[in-house]
Amino acid sequence: MHKVGFFRSVQLKFIIVYILLLLIAIQVIGSYFVRQLEEELVDNFKTSIDDRIDVVNVYLEQAFEKERPEDGSGPTLQEEIQRIVNEVDTAEITSLQVINNQRRILGTNNYMEQDNIGKKTTEDIVQNVLRNKSEQHTTQLNSNTGNRVFIKAVPIWNEDNTLAGVIYVEGNMEGVYAQLQRINGIFIKASILAVTVSALLGIIVARSITKPIKEMRRQALTMAQGDFSQKVNVYGNDEIGQLAETFNDLNDRLRDSRATTEEERRKLSSVLSDMSEGVIATDETGAVTLMNDAAGYLIGRDPDEVRGDFLLDVIKVEERVEDISELHENGSMVIDYSGEDELFLIRANFSIISDEEDQITGFITVLSDVTEQEKIEQERREFVSNVSHELRTPLTTMRSYLEALTDGAWEDKQIAPKFLNVTQNETERMIRMVNDLLQLSRMDSQEDTIHKEKVDFISYFHEVIDRFEMNTADRFTLKRRLPPSPLYVWLDKDKMTQVLDNIISNAIKYSPEGGTIHLDLKKQNRYLAVSIRDEGIGIPPDKQDKIFDRFYRADRARSRKLGGTGLGLAIAKELVEAHHGKIWAEGKEGQGTTILFTLPLISQKRRKRK
Picture 1: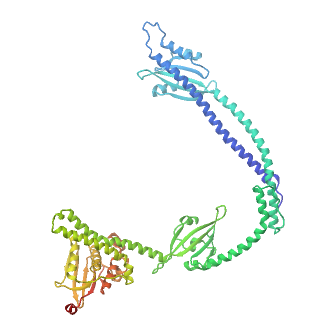
Picture 2: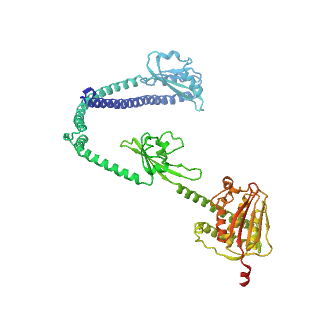
């Protein structure tokens, strides 16, 4: 490299920048100082004028209100006004006129304007004061002298708050600006002296800084050629001296750094190969520079083939992203790789790689399979929703009985205890129902116990239907066909009530208003068969087996609108099978749905022996 001349050196640039910064500082401070000084001087001038006007205004108001003898023995109003204005100091006020409410000049302190006394004034500002009844002021140039003049007009009021006249004042402001100009001259001379002294000091300081920098530049060129034998002279313990010491240590550090870099690269390669998560590295433009085998497996691409491809194209981000750095702001996103029959979701977490100056040099994307997590989360949400669905029916029953009590049934000594007993039973059943829902997983593992008792299913079924009729009699018809003679089964009444509640509630939800729910029961050999048929939308034959799957909905939009969760029939199936029965669905789309289930009867011979 050739030697850098003085006019291209850092030394000259440092001096120029130093002087420019000083000039800018002086200019900013000077402008602020002059502006503030000008405002202060002008404000003081105007305040002085206002104070004198206030004094004159007091005397003039007294003069206007003063009662004068009819014989004319005392001074006239015009004479007294002229006496008052003649006493005004003319050092700053060059002209003071007193004008009545008819715009006629009654007096002036300017001897050159004595001929105007008695004449109407033509000043616009006076007319504005008489019209608006408020003081006015302005600043303008005198057309004859070219001086800046401050003009102010103030109303004179009578005791009855009527406008008696106007005080018109002109003040010469040239004294203010002459004083300001003298101060500016002093400030400019001081600034020139400060810049000159600062330039000399800047040259000395720049030389002391650039000398060791030149030596380090020569040493850096030597090190770039592979020669690490020379040392840099250290001048002092300041930042430049510390930088020189760093250059002297650079030889050993470079040698160690190269060895460390190679070792870390091998470690990184080993870690990436053994990771279960996918890792993709890109440069600042988003071009792929590295991808491990796990990432290739997740997205179905060969890591060697995607090198250089754009990241968003590789991971198939469909949403519109104008700048790849926006991905880091989002933090992460879930990308859907699902096929027609299989759910496959990948979560991509984005982070940036930046240098010491916080400039983005690349991006890191970590891919992980979250399919199972999403399924579990979805089932959890569905389960919570199902709890609300299962509690709605008993709560409605309780509300009906409580409303009846509130409406006056509590006074009936025969009905009130029954209603309270039903309410208590429903409360206890809700508690047991919640416990059963929370133990749904135990039912799958056959750890849940069924507390069976011998029950006449006919009378029990009547009780369930009666409870529903009480709540739905005005909207639906529950038509029952049950044998007259009892049929005994072993069952858990709470569990079976949950089954019937789920099935009948679904029949009511999916039936049109005013429809009929058919509830049939008959004996089939050693089993009793229960049939519950609605007049709703029906279920296609290909979906009849799926309605008993957990969280399945034949019509999701309608089911959600009606408050369904997709878990009721699944629970019913588990409970019926726990009673050694079977449950299935029949019907056609548009012709209603029939839910049927069977339960084993208690053997007659066995019952007789007991």
